[in-house]
Image (cartoon, rainbow, N blue to C red; front, side, top):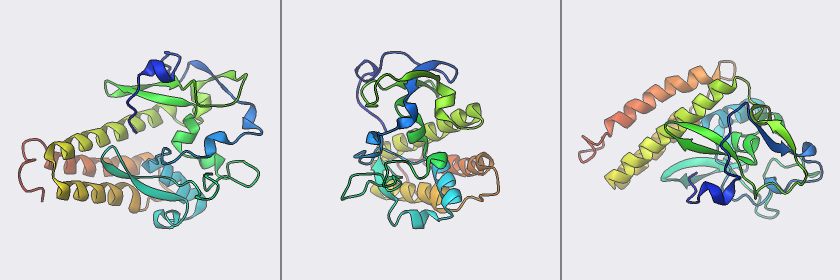
Length: 232
């Protein structure tokens, strides 16, 4: 999700790598679940998030859509996000004692918080969002330990590839101004990367990159050279 704000407004100005230290330690978030409430549609789910959730909960994407996630337009493309409960404003996975019931398999955005990502030059750096976490006296922790994801380099590359693939698609459909193409693109992305189940016994990255090849072929089929023609 793009934010039209300057980095100086929301961070301390430092761009961080996985090996850098930042004030992230929150004492296990004891007694606080503020970041799990009233987040609106901001917790966008990428394909790995869905892989983790469907595997851990033994639920399909469609089953998650019944009450845990929802679909919304993100920068011109329909993507899933965690659903906040209408009555309490809390994440559907927040337990009654204010703890995350899927902590081991929580989405990437949740793993990051209060970090953000600053994308530039087909890569990204992390940054600390200084106004987000309400916990005081946080301790310094290495970024990669905080993100808590195996094979950090592979994961970061996946995040980049997914982000820039979506950005390229967004630019093309905006250039076209073609509503039918937008609908076709939305259904293509949802079907290929979300609705079609991933094999929980196989490596996620291998499955994703096979799909990404198909995705890039679709993207190339609506390149600027052909964008004014029939999108079919």
